[in-house]
Length: 308
Image (cartoon, rainbow, N blue to C red; front, side, top):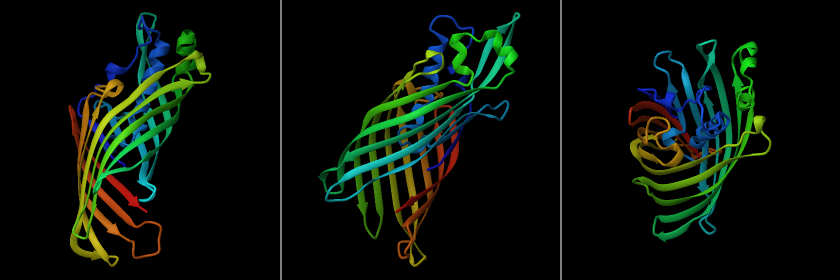
């Protein structure tokens, strides 16, 4: 479900490594920062499903996160739960080098792509209530693109900086989730509620430019509430429903404070069209407008979802 978020204050500069920094290997910082960006796209998260952070001075997007996915229990008799998610991230940090006594800014771009999946089982603990443990796996890749004249960077082409210049980093992730799910479906109203804790450890693997390795953890706690009820109007020979929803994601570990906030909230209102009377693949379509907010953060979204 796509959404869009704009930071009022850009705290991203605190995350950007500098080429002249001593101490811990810059190579390691580059790798860990790249994988850390990917952590926001490997678990289902309605509050950050399409997150854009802009530089207010230039109006340009320095960070774009986007994900598309879904999940469902296949059968009540054999309640296997399957979910899948594809995520994309574009991150445009700037690096500084010391050239003849003056600092030169090097613009770069990292593009990450991740594929994640999960398999679980529903344990029905009470009417309408299910406890759902899930095993999650993820595969991803990071590609860096150095956008600067080669003659400048050739003077600083140390092994530790090779990852910036068209480098590639492959990652694998393994973890799990535990979800408490409530579902009530009736002619009067439908209510969905989910409380989910997720943890996935991401680790680079295989050969990478400059011998770089990296790791990061995706860890968060999410609560999601949704109510759907008839508006009293019929459309496509079925009741047209209104949708009210709310969500909050609390981030931990690597993700906490990384983008200037520890948590994100979402409030939404929309409409749902029921097309189940007709012989088509899609049974329901929802369009939801959302308001997003958190510490130093506010924004808006338009979400589109379908049920089969």
